[in-house]
Length: 241
Image (cartoon, rainbow, N blue to C red; front, side):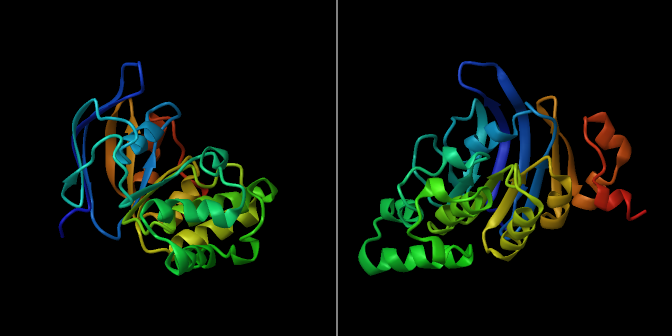
């Protein structure tokens, strides 16, 4: 199967700083769910911003569906859900925020209304369409971010710490939502049980490079590997033994 995402020799640097990642090589095939794990500050968010074309690559190449990703060019094929909802939601109401992306794609009128309604329905937010963004709960804001990305019908979704600061009920609702959506997913998270539930594959990054890439249970269940890179075996695997 041809990869949807191809990363070759990629180096990533934060603006005005030295490289945080170097020599990254990996493919993601259509429909795959990939977890990205590693210590704080290792560059997971910066990698996502580079894959989404927000940050330029310091070296190497990123291709999405065979087309090179160019920094600064709007590409609805890839959508990113930011770690903090407040960095993503900016319109007065939920419906207006979800409509923003499709409107940039040229949708208007009934076509735009239908796209917004579809995304809100998938995320179980129809009843909140007219609510001001600042009146949404934390879990509702997270689902609103996802709805805004889904409304553009991306082929690849990048989710940065999607369960951060969510209570248990909102976290479970989020997991069930992400299980049911169609786009290929990459999920960066310290919530390793969530990664285990959602992702069949895990990429472990530390010290600026990929240290492991393979089946999620094998990577996350390797106590020596996880400890060597500042991680722990998630409870779901520890208690299974």
